Length: 335
Image (cartoon, rainbow, N blue to C red; front, side, top):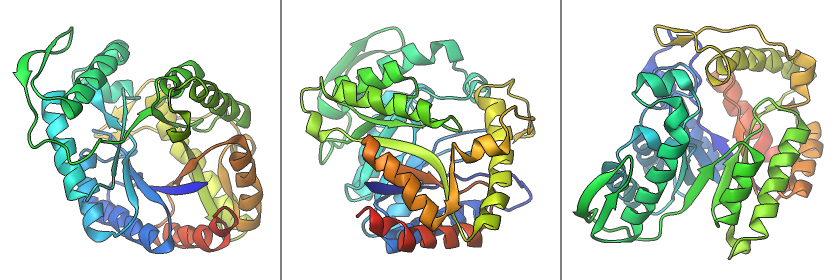
């Protein structure tokens, strides 16, 4: 099983300098590279203090410049917010500047507040994403591409320079039917149960493997699963980090499934119905020995890669310490 550290740029205290926030993410990427993580992932979100990275390809190039071996994944680039004629060239350039370590994770967007304030109706994102993905794939693989669709109409163009390799694509999907169809089409899949229970996760995993079984080249397909994951020093540390995680989801839920109450870029934390005890069973926040036991179930389920989100409001030093505990006390059991 592979391990991928999520550079999630959580920003609950906006008095913390923005430059320092992004420098923290770069330092985490450097540390992940040294510790032996397989990859790092970079989100794309705008106008909000959760998962705040407005330019993931720009961050990917920075990370590549200060690391040597980790793969660099967008998790995820929001296609309906981009013009594919421009974005295709940006992807090619970023992959070249990342020395071929870029994996392009793409999706349709998750936060209505964000999408609609940037001019994309949430109800249109599925249809817009499907056409955008088709345009992007065409531009990355063919020359003199023309298009006559609902969202794109253009005469023949060739994106320059041409890619140095076939770009690895990964599709973000949450619903099991969507996961099934992506895998069946022969696409790597990135998913997450968020704070959902293990049954929700197992349904997602089963859908991937059912679709993968019907793909033309199933052995090449990979399932990546994003989970809040913090290797605690002890049980008291784990309990403290669960409180922070609950506060994180108070903001996340507001813009993901809730009313989208945002003021001056700050998401209002709303009360949740899920108890902290219930949350503890859905996220991976525990000391190392328990972490090994819980991740063994993920491996047995057939999950190829875990994307680990340790940025849930702890300090930078605490996150770095948790990363090191995971690398030294957990990863060796799965390598």
